[in-house]
Image 1 (cartoon, rainbow, N blue to C red):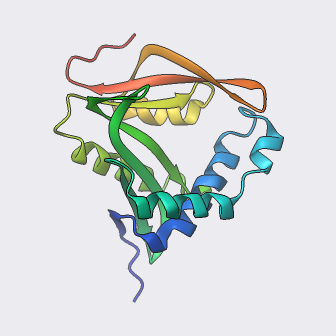
Image 2 (cartoon, rainbow, N blue to C red; image 1 turned 90 degrees about the horizontal axis):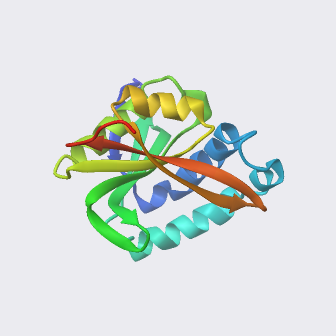
Length: 177
């Protein structure tokens, strides 16, 4: 019998290929029109998986990787750890990434991953994340979960094009900007 329940568990080294596939396909799906298409087209699942395996083996400082699995298939991935304020780590937490296989958007897997991250970060006063300013779907997802834009914005360059991000926060003493 096939178990269709969703399970959230720690990522293993054997999961790196599938997680990279989800991450790259997630970027190509979610960031279409928000980043230069040649950059998105040039993303490589194989290169990402190689880098991910190396990071996993080396043990990224304080990073927790989780996968969402349904019916034996990994359908989503999230990573969290200490908040990065430049090179300085603070006492707050940060959701670094959450991606789903585009075929599983709206399935509850993203919400379950986020709830697990928030449970694991419960000892921190605040949880931060950065989201592309133009990514309305992701911004709505985080706002429904209680995150609020705090007024901080950054842009980074992708193939010479500035891509603006907005910082969101959830936690004690947080008010909307």
